[in-house]
Amino acid sequence: MGSFFYIVSKMAAAEDTPIVPFLFLVEIDGFSGSDDVAFQEVEGLKMGMNESLEIFEGGLNTNSYKLPTSVSYPDLVLRKGVMPDESPVTDWFVNTLSSGFSKPITPKEMKIQILSPKGGVMRAWKVMNAYPKMIEFSKLDAASGGFFVQTLVMAYDNFLPIKPERELS
Image 1: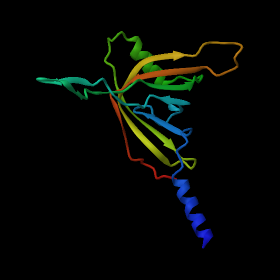
Image 2: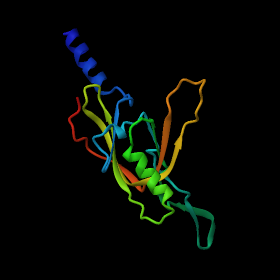
Image 3: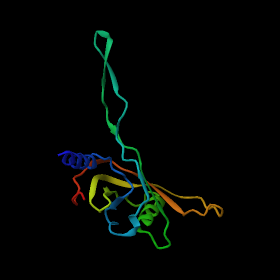
Image 4: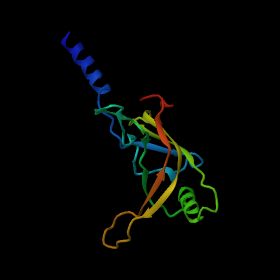
């Protein structure tokens, strides 16, 4: 009987283990399914309340009410190694940023998914109306021996958690 409780508690512990976010998948509308969206780092899935508006009650200046104003989202930052082949995502950034606003900016929807070691989706978010804001390449350093990395910075409207399309494995 003791081993039964041990097995059940081990199973419960596995389900309660925090997610390790080193396996993830980024999909950008129009670019999905290629190695071009294989990023090594993603940051910026964050939302926060902006400053509150403080209002004093008429005739009672000793008390005030703090009212929420709006929610803001920081920039989404994606990093990946630069590949020798052409990159449609990099081209989208360069074309958008170098057009001098003579062409309309084309926002994209994105999906960011954390994968289990078996390939199932553990958590997922949909990012709405993301568009290029900045592209940066790492410095060229003959002594470092590291990879040439590009950093892509995107603005976006908001993000929402979504139900994973693939079963948790």
